Image 1: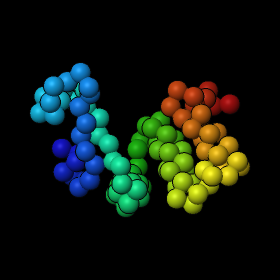
Image 2: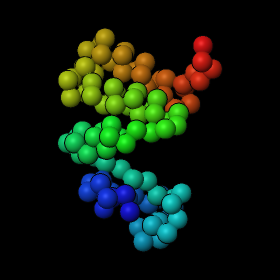
Image 3: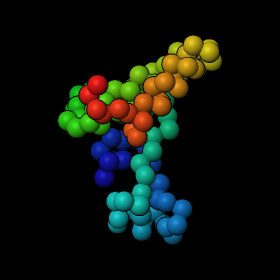
Length: 101
């Protein structure tokens, strides 16, 4: 399981499921979450830097990494930084223009 492999984070079942054990049996009903900032930087980001994604999710990771590194630098408390973070976030996932223009 990913939690044991990476050594951080938690597997969270969706609310409609009765237990974590039940959620472990069906991958589409669970979420893997990492809460500690140190785990994000030292484990998750390092892992994906060393093992790059080969799909369009690589762009999502690059944006997420930029976004997440702004917070410890306290960019989110300035108007400029907040606007920059909003711009990054609004372009992620379904907000991304994949037309190549």
